[in-house]
Image (cartoon, rainbow, N blue to C red):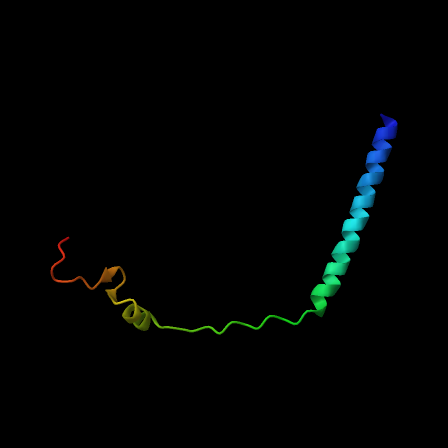
Length: 69
């Protein structure tokens, strides 16, 4: 059991070292990449948004005349 525990510890430390090395490489590659462009944000006031959605007020839409509730 002592030999198995020692082997498990070796494997664990080897995997940890390899993962750390890969992580360091990933950080270097990430720093070399150009930054993503920032998205263009479109700002609408509440009134404009309501007009686009054909709503007179929040939750109240235009109902055709032949529709019954």
